[in-house]
Image (cartoon, rainbow, N blue to C red):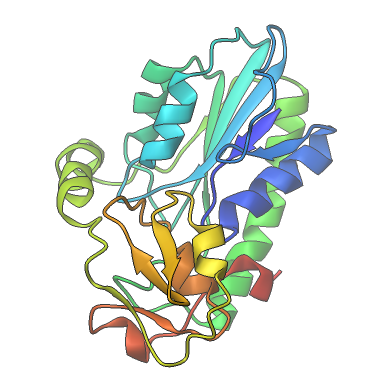
Length: 240
């Protein structure tokens, strides 16, 4: 079983590709209400890197896994570097193989998005990498292929801690007159922090910064502070 967490589709696509190539199943860990995996299964985790760390719900889900897998692996999607995320994940759950895959940037809240050419180039490279990863998983080869980057410990400890403490606020979110009251943002929110009030979204306090609400809004009606109004939006389905 391959469990994934995904905001705008990068990690979902990776999980589904691996499932198809290895004859497995990909399941959204935020929606998983079925039985826990049993011993001697192959268990995979696929998730994005948020500020050189694993998102909170990924860690929460992984801590609840009790099965002793026959083989286990984790794949993180990132803009470039994963830091020491996989080392930390191995302290939470035994992982035989770990990988990082560079995928298009979706963090419209903090930066400009990439060009179409850059996005397509990364996806093409990722497809080639996934062929290799799938073959290694099928052969149950223990592999560590992670781009930790420079100053990995600093980024995955102090900077990640600061991000989780100070940069996950929902206060800057707001909705414009473009809102059509479709409620997609509330349905897509893995933190279940968005409620529709009088036909408009309102945000609670909890946020995983997955950027699903702002990126997947069909009318681009959601903004975050002053910077996002001039930026585009990203979702993997737009480039697949």
